[in-house]
Length: 210
Image 1 (spheres, rainbow, N blue to C red):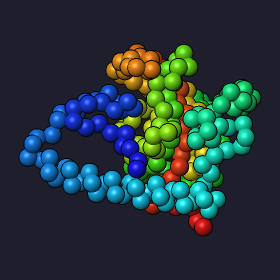
Image 2: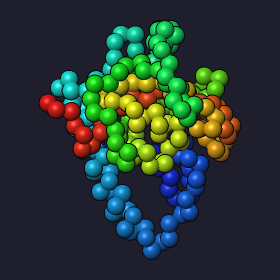
Image 3: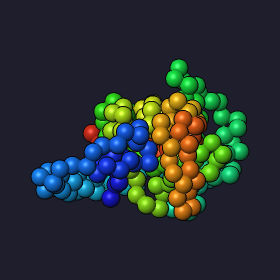
């Protein structure tokens, strides 16, 4: 089941913009619970569909041998991949975001406001991993809606389904508030550069032609 990159119940999601929402009133809990159950059912269907597309070869959930498969190494870009990235041309956008495509997708491209299903690995400016969706569940998020940090939002919008991309996100497009250290996870100071490896799995409503 897909997890949501969203902020709720007064807590801040790891990749949120840093804005914390107030906890919902008790009177709204029943409605919210029902809505969440419906969304969970939808998300489960999305992931099943993504897996079906992958099995049919419509989208690529794993790349060449140089790129580690999620189930094997829990990485989207292994040591060999990192070495190869040195020769991959970097793209710098007007905002200051820099990215390199590990695998260029061949499927549809997201539209602002559309839901996407992704895997990701997040690292601080020293290369230490602080979040990893592999081995858990992919995340679904609406792109261009401000549900994640600006650099991640922008980086996903120009990807295509089946693609894997490394995003070098400058501090001004990263976390406006610090992320505290936890067991096995380093802290991430506010407004410091971060690196994301992102794998675009599926876009509901923009299925590739079979």
